[in-house]
Length: 68
Image (cartoon, rainbow, N blue to C red; front, side):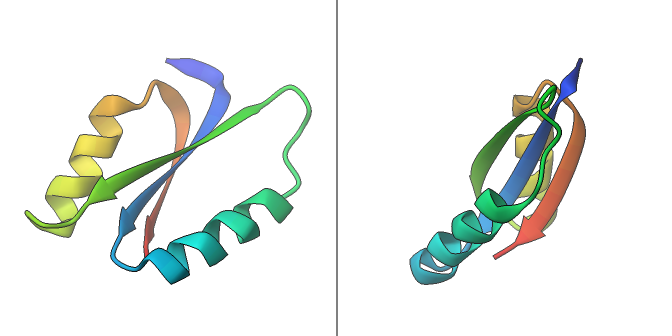
């Protein structure tokens, strides 16, 4: 587990909203010692399944789940 990393796990439904979300995330002030990544997951099998997929794919200690 990477304690210096934050993952935004996004269940993407709309390209337009996803683009806006990425712009918003880039405005968040993150401490210099931290790394940030965005994981896009598909909600075709349900939101819970998508978030579980993202959780398993990320080594971040801190995960933020967003329905887009």
